[in-house]
Amino acid sequence: MFKEIQHNRRGFLATAAAGVVAAQFASMSSAHAGAAFQLGPVRQVKAGVLDVGYFEAGPADGPPVLLLHGFPYSVDSFVEVAPILAARGARVIVPYLRGHGPTRFIDNATPRSGQQAAIGVDVVALMDALKLDRAVLAGYDWGGRAACVAAALWPERVSGLVSVNSYLIQDIAKASLPVAPSVESGIWYQHYFLSERGRAGLVANRREIARTIWLRNSPNWRFDEATLARHVAAFDNPDYVDVVIHSYRHRLGAADGYAAYAEVERRLAALPAITVPTITLDGGADGVVPATDGKSTAAKFTGPRSHRVVENAGHNLPEEAPKEFAEATWELLSARRAG
Image (cartoon, rainbow, N blue to C red; front, top):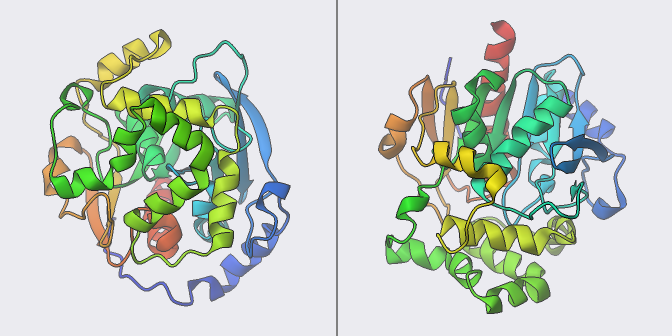
């Protein structure tokens, strides 16, 4: 079922099917004005503690997939992946994570948590709101972590998983242990956000912080200012700073989790295995998480799992290598449909 994918990005958007769906995506929200290719229009649905902003494409009765973005990025990471999958018949759902874009907390009193349990619960709540019994989850960075959490704890809801950088559930008990200096230097912003200076910096400089992280994370990605601006528009959210700061402080053991997620965090502390069919991807030029052969995390995947390295791609793999990401996702979607 899991065939190897060759890296060949050139010309893939020239396919007729993807071109038809790309035309359907031409209508856009004002937040994305000026992009060469668009996801819009944005939809809203109340899901758990959130009013989630999301995009949807493809047939309503197609096999569903949630595409989940990372930090500091947005749904724009999937502007080329989504139409490929929709053209093949998938129901494609691309939500803004909490603290991003038009996604809002329903109750002002709800803690602005960014912890891994919260973003994992958000995925299942969104599936409930959209009346999806099961779906393929495909993501990277924060979105990959949310997908891993959902797949590990609620496998009956997940028909397949695509995760960039393999197993992303955090071992918070070991958060104080150092890693290689070459890796520590790439996560400078995580340590920066532990301080109030870092919080103030994120308030004042979210665009330049994103640019600096992107340059390190993806040294081969030649993004332009318009691309950066489209992503940064999603950071103009009243909860963005609180969610981001709590996420990094919690994962490094510098902030407590919130009571609503205590039981989920307790289960995650055991680092549960992922049993659903999985394809893991590493970017061969990822500047923050070096590519591996996948063997170090093999024990965490007890179901069918294939691991691939996408040469020349960095940390924002869906946007840098959309064909490879879409092909991996479609393998799982088509397997579900065949079953």
